[in-house]
Length: 179
Image 1: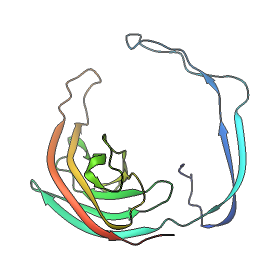
Image 2: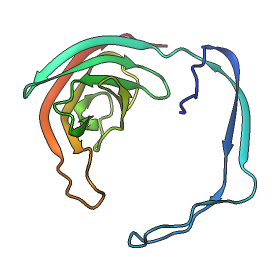
Image 3: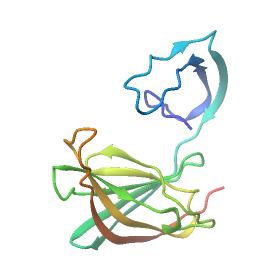
C-alpha cells in the first residue's frame, strides 16, 4: 500500500516506478546525542510495473455517538481491498493538546479481532483515518475506546501531561457486499 503524490484516476494499465535506496546507518545508543546521517550504498533497487487502478468503494455512514460530553462522528468507511479505513471526526476538547482517537483491534466487530491498537493518522479538518483489519461487509461496527491528547508545546525531556477521555463511542452500520 502506498500513497500517491497526486490523485490517480481509476483505469487500466497505469505505469508505476518503485525505487528503494540502500543506505548505511550508524547504530548508536539513546544516550549519544546524534548519529551521522545515513549514506547511500550502491545503486537503488528499481521496479517498474503496470497495473490497473480501481476506485475505492466508499460507505457513507455519517453516524454520531456521544460519551463523556464528547461527540464523535464516523463519517465514512473507505473500503479499499488493500487498506480499508474508517474516517472518524470530532471537535478537539482544547487547543493545548494534539487529540486523536484510540481504537483497539478488539473494538472492531470483524471476523478476526486481535489484540493491540490500530494505526491512526490525521486527515485534516478534525478527522482521523483509522486503519481497519479488513474490508467490512454486512453488519459491522467500529468502537473508539478513548481519545488521547498529547501536549503540543513540551520539551522532549519535559513532563508528558497526556489527557484521556474515555468512551466508548460505538458505531453500527450496514456495509454492502463486494465481489
